[in-house]
Image (cartoon, rainbow, N blue to C red):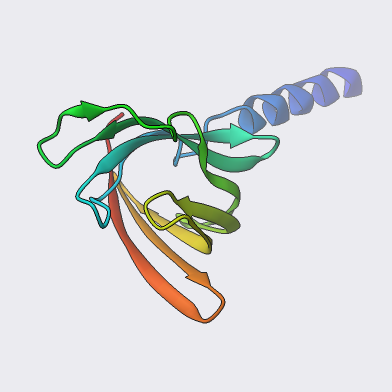
Length: 130
């Protein structure tokens, strides 16, 4: 009997550990300093949250080619619970700066913030696409 209980517990643990994090999905950024915006795919990479630029758009919503396509924008984020993520970095291609960042998930909205040294910046709120 104990053997079956142990198997059941192991199966429950395995099932819950493989569930997708609520932040996973495709997100649309706000416009950058040049009026461009992007679609970022957020997923799990090596046990932490990461995100990659999948598409870029100009101010008119037209897809534009960029050398940054498929590059990491977010890495090493950790789910802190209650929709809060921290401990990672976000790279801003338009400024070519990497920020120590925090993310806050509220439904289909993702609030971005980050700091470089003592300069902190509100990165706006991204919108979930899927």
